[in-house]
Length: 394
Image 1 (tube, rainbow, N blue to C red):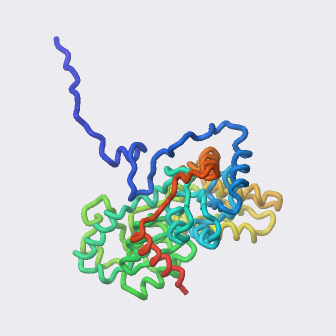
Image 2: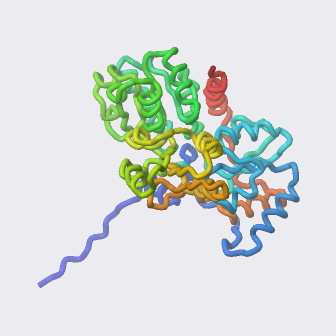
């Protein structure tokens, strides 16, 4: 009796596999690789003091931006906090700051570089802090989609509208093809404008924000929307489906907001009688339809600020923010809970931790520019055009 010997298979990992493993870099993707240099130990008890000293040494040369979804240990060093677009505008309003340290994710740092002057340098403490949603639409995939729309004979009728949560390449594509950018708070205004320019919209890259805005805020039907899947031939759609659609939604989503389900809403209503359910428009359509209130991160914060004492709230957005709001408003008697029972942080946003921030600030204080995010001039020009169209919206 003989035993078969296992054969050596000549299998080479694909570029995508290496990218997912963090062993390769793609300059046209949100994903990055490990930072160069030695990071301080996360257990170093002196990290807070080291960050404080480095920031103090840099003085007005540095301006630290902190996104709402950041950890408390990082957000404490932010000069301003906010959502991605607010922070990018805040950076542009501080021309005296030589260094903009963006505690957020890659596409946010790109937007800050686009909107700031050439003399300012935008730094992302960890290059691996990307965005899974932004990764779901690459420049090559979107160019192929446009070819599909052209072959269907409808490209001239289509106006691209891209969510702020997209790479600089996608923003540039949008600007080049006559479209605009939107945020979660002005998506309806952006779509109203787009439908004045053309008959159809290609909405990138978050299907849920596009669908929720079209159906909930603009009175369209779900049948007016089709889902373009970049991993299928022709996006998985027929020419007839593309021609009949008003909203061509890209198959992308937020990994955090996409986790909330209708069961989450039903469960929290059973557990907490009288609870108000407040969710972000990146949530699934059925979740948004079942919620009491829907709005952007800034809307969520303002709604809780205005809420009466003793009110109860279940919030469908990133856990760092929900926990911070719960602690902030607890003295006012407001009960604030996370919508789902499952803990759900934004994993890429959480890559910006205290060791990375300390390393970046100390490097800058020593005169070493690290992890600079720089958008090439051609991409910047078209992306800025799309952003300027958004700023000009009524």
